[in-house]
Length: 336
Image 1 (cartoon, helix red, strand yellow):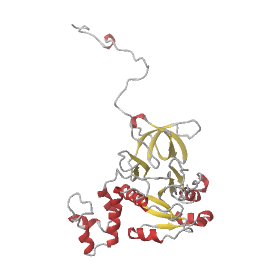
Image 2: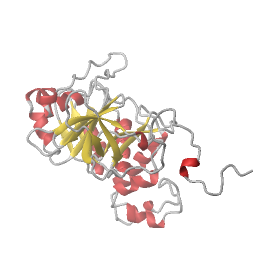
Image 3: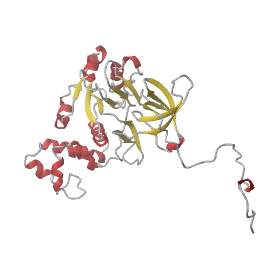
Image 4: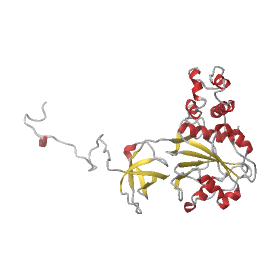
């Protein structure tokens, strides 16, 4: 049965009214070509503080981004009120491609990875030489995450007045990782900050370490204008400190072209997301020797070609030992 006549026009067609009074949905999304570029400084309960043209702007993520989350260090495109005035809110409409990413999982059985920092150039791994005791397995895990994510690592060893650094230096010497050794006195008088700052100029550096090692104290010395609450006391029973940094925060270095990203203290660093085949890229002296390896070689088996590569003098045996120790850390807990 014909509902309309032969000569109907749009006025004759019945339409259902939109009860909400808003525009109908469309799959066509705006391109936001006029959006301004910014950098995420910190994230707090769905609100993101971004640096836009030298001023801090509060923003929220646009719904069109779906489940994609922005993290500290991300370069983002923003629209809306970018004045930075109190009670104003901009909108993040695009997250630019990341050139590096530091990720971790809660443990090795957790399939959900957490992005800690994006676009950092290097990872400063802070560890105390005593009180609390150093945890080499945790350091190994941080190194694997750095190599996998495209960050250059370096070590900051604190509290050298309580114990010498020789053991750790011997353990990581074959990796040729830059390092700085500091004492409590040097942290107090600023000498430690000056020596660490020499590694930071012109770079975005994420600081990571378990609680009680003096990480936040060091960050406060590097950026005294934006002091964070210092690290809590070390628990005499567990040998671990209390978390005092609860969210990652990017801070500009004074008198230098660089950024420091202070991250919450970690008690575990899961590597469930890590593809072991990518770790070899951090060993350019060993990587050519993998051409003769069997498919899906773990680099720690009988037919691994790296043994012959090292035996022929192409690389130092200590480098192969370090590679295999780092790869094996996915199968061990930090305290083992």
